[in-house]
Amino acid sequence: MPAGVADADVPSGRRRFHFPHPLALLVACIAIAAALTYVLPAGRYQRRDDPATGRSIVVPGTYARVAPQPVSPFQAIVAIPKGLGEAGSVVFLVFLVGGAFAVVDRTGALRRAVERLAHGLGRRESLVIPVACIAFAMGGIVENMQEEIIAFVPILLLLTRRLGFDAVTAVAMSVGAAAVGAAFSPVNPFQVGIAEKLAQLPQLSGWQFRTATLVPALALWIWGTMRYAARTRTTPDAASVPAADAAGLGRHGVILAIVGITFVVLVVGILKLGWDFDQMSALFFLMGVAAGLAGGLGISGTAAAFAEGFASMAGAAMLIGFARAITVVLEQGQILDTIVHALFLPIAGLPIAVSAVAMAAMHVAIHVPVPSVSGQAVLTLPILVPLSDLLGLSRQMTVFGYQIGAGLCDLMTPTNGGLMAVLAAAGVPYGRWFGFALRLFAGLFLLGIVGLIVGIAVRV
Image (cartoon, rainbow, N blue to C red; front, side):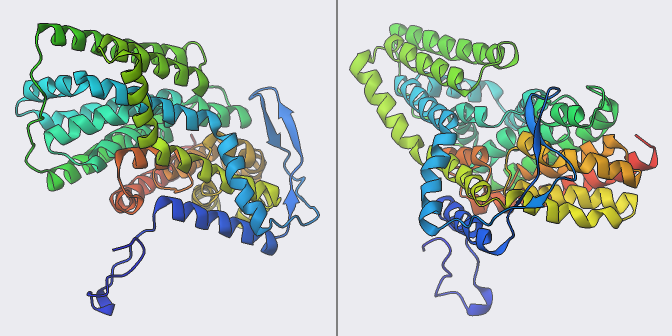
């Protein structure tokens, strides 16, 4: 049955809603964004370069109407290749990661390693979930890991399927755990780091409070993931890995060493050398070439495996560009600042605790058209910090409200290109992921709200 269509055999009162395909969902968002440019008044805040963050930030109190610039239907379509161009570095990372792991998979080394790991775990397979959740949460805590997780998807799928868990479990214990870690992180430079600079707070200030909320938040996510995995687990099928001679086993060892070294270099490059997506893409291309030659595929076999990997990741890569096109349309129509101004204007007259909760809720709404957490920080916090000063709300709680609103929204917003790419790479329909994540998101957001109220009460 096509997505989004009710089953004709089901009585009308029991028809089930089906989420449309992610591509159709994003195109609909682009169309809605273009339509809004005809409805909402165009307006902009003035901006200035901020030496503390190195970014262009809005100047509070400077919002003014500008001449309407409605985006025509054809311009909205043109925004799609523009979005792909703006997201080019991430798109190429997805292609090259897919190609590299297709090469590794063709050698059989990774499948054999997963089989050995599954046998080694014995009856302790469930430990994989908390260990993986904590590991990926650390990636979110330290460096806002998201698109980088695409590189781990092939390994995670092999492991979870071998243990009887489904693809949703693989996504939950990777990108889901990373998003939770990032949302409650005391040190994430792309969320709390930039936000504290914009709020003129000392770096790492309030880390004790954030850590106290991070621990139960991560525990809740791990519990939810393990509970889902236990309910949906099937009988594991033994992997069909062909027997290998001594020479084959030796090649497999070399290939696994290449993969391991690649990830070590990746972590060092991100944390110490300031690598961006271009450097990561080059690293995975080298990994694929080295693995193919070490595995005896030859130049032609390695190239053919790369091409198969490119094809398998095409859908995931394109979703990132389509998601970016939504922001392109909103900016072209000059209504992004209007949306922010309209959402936060009513908060000024609310009591302190209510205004803090309202700020967090508004950040959830804004994160749909602004799926970049750092972009959302430089757009909203220069407006909210002076407002919170007038209300008597501490700047620390203003930053925390932004974290839980924008950060947790990364779990579900369809405009988050990184999430949609991971879902596509793992073969998980967006509607299925949404159904899994919604209740946990609600619990985590409620936990964040409790943290906000407690922080206000104890004057963090």
